[in-house]
Length: 189
Image (cartoon, rainbow, N blue to C red):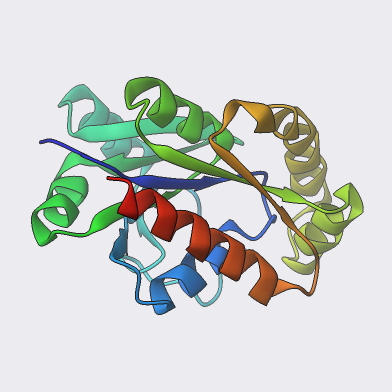
């Protein structure tokens, strides 16, 4: 499988990665989101095969052992990754794959595929992440764990191709900035 160009949106938990990706897909760019496979519990409103492929840790480990994962990582005691079959399907469709992954997964992708266009989303204020995580009604221990991880992840921002600040309540701005950036990258392929 040959990937000429693909896009990766990353950043700390609750920074707005999924919301940005959803808006980019609505913008009629030639992108298709890679559906991540995970072992975490499905949240309210999520559907298997739409936001994620939800599987057991044992099944995930089997996919790793059979070399069926394109990339994978662990985050907060759960496996996350993309299956090779899902990536191949997108490449064959003629669209540019779009990953929405944690920082660890984005680093792996960038190391394996230096031509990847990586976009790091950073919050305008760290307190914004805390408020967004609290709004998800996660257990306090999980919120604290994610915030601790987020501090380390934000320090990785300079490693990525592009950085965009997500100002709370300014979705149109971040979508416009990311759309322009992606259109320039596609034009330069």
